Length: 317
Image 1 (cartoon, rainbow, N blue to C red):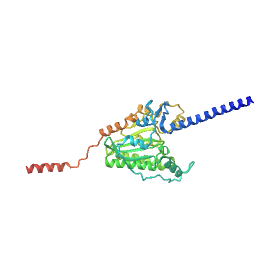
Image 2 (image 1 turned 60 degrees about the horizontal axis):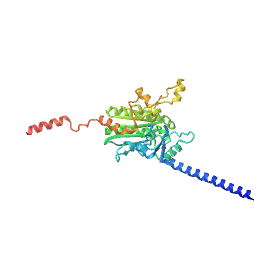
Image 3 (image 1 turned 45 degrees about the vertical axis):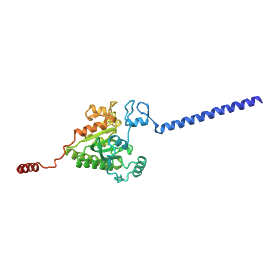
Image 4 (image 1 turned 180 degrees about the horizontal axis):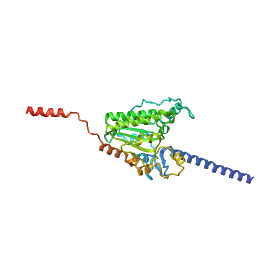
């Protein structure tokens, strides 16, 4: 009888410990979920946990190792443009499915899913604003939208931005990030390379400034066109920049490529990039470059008119 009571007591004690362990693990899981909800950020480079608010204050650059985390287009605009000066352009332009393309799913469904998931209409935002009081035409690509691939609307928005900047005599800055041309639009996406390049040539002929900022990653048709056509080409540290993928090049050449191949540092060494710039210094550097390259104010009064005024004033005396 006593043995039965002892066994029941031992069983209840073990059940109590088991229940306590379960409740403890549940509390731990709840705490982990709360941490993962955005309060802390773990750096993918060095693994350091950083308070998300502090990380955002440092423009999403790790304070420990300097790793540049990817930022979306809205955050990038907030980092660069003076408060209250941003005027978006061509927000009504929406992508279509002219080729009725289908891979694992119809392209039209993929577009709709991306728009619902990201809240974006397309992979680029364009507009006019000011950097430290200086006017600027800014385009910002967003990798969340189909890898910031360049389709017809991306090309059209950037071309219109550049043409508007040429008309207003504004400098152009484009924050580049992309997986390349959008395969779902076939040749129509490749045509955007020529269209944007032509708009940039007219901008250059007007003796106006264009600065692309290459971020991680910038590849494919974007690299082969407007990303490499800048008067001054800036890049973020350790950004992947190239045309074809590393594996494709290795298979084609049948050679092992250097570890730093297609990095911003490698391109700087070979003269494709003018400067590697930490994100925290980008706004001030852009402001200085724009101020140095400000076009002279157009003369509103012809010299002959001024000469005639001088003669008339002399005669009156």
